[in-house]
Every structure is written in C-alpha cells, then in structure tokens.
Image (cartoon, protein in one colour):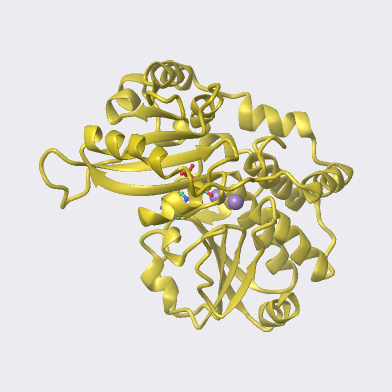
Length: 331
Ligand code: AMP
Ligand code: MN
Ligand code: MN
C-alpha cells in the first residue's frame, strides 16, 4: 500500500493535507511534516485544519501555513487525511473534501473506518507521525530539522511523553533519530508543557475541584464548563491533558472529562452539547465505549460528543462500570 500511495502522490500536482478538528500535537505534527515532504516531490500543497492551532503548538516551523478556510476544492487531485478515524473528523469541510477524486487515509485509531481509496492504517503505530516518518523514509527523502521537530512533537504528545500504553520501540528510535537531526528536546518540552497561562493554572484548579468518583471507585468524572472557561479567560484547548489527573487516581479504571461545548442551534431546553474524553488504566477498552456513543479512538484514549443534561450524562457514565466485564488488557 505504501508504494501505491507514493505512486499516487508523485503523480498528483495539487494536494490537500488535512487533519482532525481541535487538533492535538500529532494532528499538527503529521500535517506539517507531510506538507513539507509533498512540496519536496513537487506537489502544490494546501495545508488545512478547521480549528485554531493551540498556543502551545504555535512554535512549530511553518505552522502559519495551515489555513482554516477551504474555498475551492475543485482543483485538488488528492487529499491526504491524517490522524482521523473517520473522514467526518476533519469537521465541516467533510462534504467538500469528499468530492476530491482521490482520498488517502493515514491513521492509527482502532476505530478507523477505512474511508478513502488508499489507507495506511496501523493501529500499532504510537502516532500518525510514526507512520508519516516511515512514509517519508520510503519516499527516499532526507528529513530536515523542520520535519523532524514536527514528527518529534507528534510522537512526544501522543505517547504522553512516553508514558501511555501506545509507547513502542519506534517512539524511541524515531525520536532518537529526530534528535540526531537537530531537534532540541528541552526546547520542545518547554513550548508544549512549560508555557501555561495563569488562566490555565486557574482552570486546572477548578477542574481538579470538579472531580467526582463512582461509589465503587472505578470511574472518575471531571467537568469543564463554559463558565469555568470564561471565569478564567481560557480557551477549550486549555483543558487538553487535564483528564490525566482524573485518570491517575488510585483504583480508577476509567476517567471521563465532560467538556461543555458551545450551544448548537437545535439543542432542546435543559440539554447541552458535551464532548466526553475517556481514558482507561489499561483494563477497559474505551474505544468500544466511545463507539457505542458514535465516537471512537484508541483502547486507552477515546472520545465522543452528545447532547444531554449534565446530570443525565453523569448517570450514564457511572452506569458504564456495569459493562466493564467486556474488558481488555493493553500492553
Ligand atoms: P479526546 O476525547 O479529544 O481526548 O480524544 C481521545 C482520542 O479519541 C483521540 O485519539 C481522538 O482522535 C479520539 N476521538 C475523540 N473524539 C472522537 C469522536 N467523536 N470520534 C472519533 N474519535 C474520537
Ligand atoms: Mn489526534
Ligand atoms: Mn494520533
């Protein structure tokens, strides 16, 4: 498949590269590295992401070339879609992107729907950035420090700094190679983890205070409301990573972060829209739970969006522990 994809890319002249809305380090890193690689082989490249790039990733080289608008898709030969379990994860541009003649799906989510004509889906890859590294290598290209920084950041953030269950040998060997090319690990860490605004620290305080736990101690719930964001002057991206505190609690198997979203047009009274992030301690497959709610992800980290009242949603999440018999063991 890798060969066929390289063949397709080398014969394309205008290529769209896109990754999932509300991007994380892997979505941005894989997009930036792929963009440079495609330009190297002579493609005219458009880099697209629906959402604003979180402040902690704005240090990445060429990040300003990522555009939030997609006006005319008629001229693209090929779309390369990165870190998306389903094509709808790109956001509102999904219908426009569907009209592009060839779609290449590069991803590592267990719930990947195999959309598009070409798939490079490896659920054992620690990050989409790992797959992009292998693809760039197979294309016969040398990585420059810009590409290396993007790939390093994608792997660092998706593995939770080499702590999560997706941390594999490739995570270390690729990051070692990226450092050899010139990536500065402490500089990347300072940007990604060491530059919290005061508001973000205040949000952390409110989020920690919101943690509740089920009576059997197996489920923890953290809640981040719109009011908490406005009181602290923060953005939704400032809640990234907070769920790890809820997951660390002793005996907790599944941690949920309920994130109140901006209200849509058609939400009925008393109900709101929420995104729920799920993390497991390795004994429960949360991708399966998220799929039941129309979302997806990985065994250890998944998510879904719902319309509900907050009280009802918490009840639903607490009731999940009854289904923990269908469990898995992550390595
Ligand atoms: P998050 O809930 O944003 O912390 O994401 C956890 C993991 O689940 C990430 O790998 C996401 O790409 C994936 N994910 C989150 N929400 C969804 C969704 N609605 N559909 C499919 N995958 C999702
Ligand atoms: Mn991602
Ligand atoms: Mn990823």
